[in-house]
Amino acid sequence: MTVSVLRRCESTLGPGVTRLGAAATAIGLAALAAGVLFGFATVSLGTLAVSWLFFAGVAAAAVAFSAAVRCSRARWVHVVSPVAEAGAAFFPFALALLAVLLVLAGLWMPGAVGAGWGSAARRLLRDLLASALLFASGRRYLRRARAGDGSDSTPAAVVYLLFYAAVLSLWAIDLVMSLHEWAPSTVIPPYYFMGAFLAAIALVALAESVGREDAATAATRQDLGKLLFAMVIMWGYLLWSAYLPVWYGNMPDETGQLLARWQGGWKVVTLGMLAAVLVFPFFFLLPERTKRGRKTLAAAALSVLTGLFGEHFLLVLPSLPVHLDAPSILLGACVTAGVIGLFVLTAGAAFRPRGGARSGTS
Image (cartoon, rainbow, N blue to C red):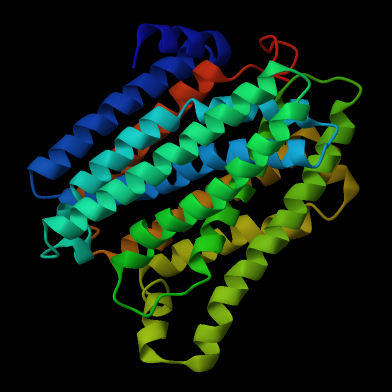
């Protein structure tokens, strides 16, 4: 983390948020090292995987949202561009954190224990190469989009969207589905990358809700509110598609992954996630006034982002042999705070609100 990044973040988010983000990043790094060295590798690296899947997914999806908007010639592409630029700033750090997760896979991934170095090397090369191609494709699209009126960026946008679906599906397979021995659900890859896309829309809606007000902002908020509402329904449909065949078939090798998330404290997390991502936004965003209002749209977007972050804990941790006692929870919370701080610093340094954006970003 360079001094220039901290200064740019301070100019955008203020000194208080920047110092908090830097402190959280340092604490997270120390907690991760302590967990690996002192016998808490599974919970510390598992929590790192949770946070990485969420923030790397949001960063990639922010660029994908911008690419989709450009392909559709939507009039509010300038609204998405600052968030896409901010998300892309996290790419190098996401690649570095992924390398840590894969190099240390034998310490936290059940399937990697005893699998041999050949299997670990193949997974390492496969995931790092695919992720590097995704991030390079995203950078290439953003450069084309900044270069002119955006007409020449459409082919690059299409290529990035294809990479986005393929690579995030690979992340879901290698970092979620491979963690348990239950029968895999083929819905998980699209469920994951569409959930990341929903989170990116919520992030754009949140940025638009707290940004500058002008004559077109209320109409743009209504458009984003409608899109957020529609994607919440789409996310619920994918979740139902994953649940219904398992419930109907009632096969022990399939129901285990659901029952693991419906026991103990995970049941509370599951219910909270469903309420935050699906139930509350669905009913709250039905009226037009809640889509247009700054505070109401921000509340819905924050609810979706919080719920989706909690959902990533459900995707990963119940599949790992972790005992969530007080030290493990504290360690996991510190690692999570570290990734949040890193994302805030990198995205905050690159974010340029509308009206103060650098030339060519819209």
